[in-house]
Amino acid sequence: MIRNDLKQRVFHLIDQERDRFIDLAKRIHNHPELNFEEYFSSDQLVGAVKDYGFTVKKPFAGLETAFRAVYEGKKKRPRVAFIAEYDALPEVGHACGHNLIGTASLSAAVAVANGIGELPGSVLLIGTPAEEGGGGKIILEERGAFDDVDAAMMFHPSGSNQLWKYAMASRIVKIEFFGKAAHAASSPEMGINALDATIQTFNNINALRQHMRSDVRIHGIILDGGRAPNIVPDYSSSLFYVRSLDDDYCKEMVKKVKDCASGAAAATGARLSFSEKEAYKTLKTNRPLTESFQKNCESLGIIFDETEPYDDIGSTDMGNVSHRTPSIHPYLSIGEKGLVYHSQDFADAANSPQGYETMLLAAKALAGTAVDFLFDMDLQKQVKKDFTG
Ligand SMILES: [Zn+2]
Image (tube, rainbow, N blue to C red):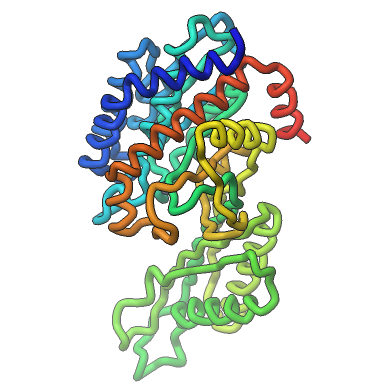
């Protein structure tokens, strides 16, 4: 059967099941859950995907609200994974539209698995909790959840149609200073002021800003600044995110931030404790997979906006997945241009007729891309070459 006929069958299945898919996304929207507490949402997705013949492992990789659903064809490989997100934000609920991401990925997985008789590979739906700050995919990636995946894909709702954009690497830095307490008025000369060291660190970092690349972001808060004004603070701590569009440069900048803190320690006499950990990696967009996604979108009437890949960038834990396996993370519009992430307007758009239509279109475009990948050995080779090259 030619590829277009296969795709028509897959698209037809999405049309047939549309009310069920929309209902599922609505239920998740109406029950927003935070990082690693997505019990209801993950159960909804797992219940639905089981109905379509998938075998599910949950909890997965030691995370209670993560899951891995598999539908095997003739052979196990190649293995295409659709990535589901389903966590929400405090107060504003699904203001990043992850209810649409989870359901679009489920719809695509179900359509490819059920729409085409026998598959030449297998289809996965991987449930990844805690995108908003918890970095669920980082943990899953470290535990090998994507090691046997040949291509990973998802879409993200947005205010515009954007095929790809950059995402920043981000590292988390904790800075602590240990000083010596003393009466701040009667014997200040006996004290070592840990808060001064923290403030000096902020000032040093602000001086550094003039001499770093424009793609760097360094932003921090003071976690502990002392107990009372009449006690010289013997302990102070702060937390920074250091971000860049370049994983290596991000590491270099962390070294400079450490120098800023060391300088502050020398100036004040406080002892420094410095720890860092990697949070997000940059997003490596796979070019051949992106091209396939673009063609599928165009065949569905989606027109991409004129945007720059630097517009409106942040960080995503899909970045970490993209360093492990070929990945795409495109954006499709669910509302007005200029729709702001994490706002009430975004939450409303993620529960609007337009939001649900975009979700179904995204499911079709992702499913079409998976069909291309599974049935085209040439594309599989190109995808691999782009990833390893
Ligand atoms: Zn998001």
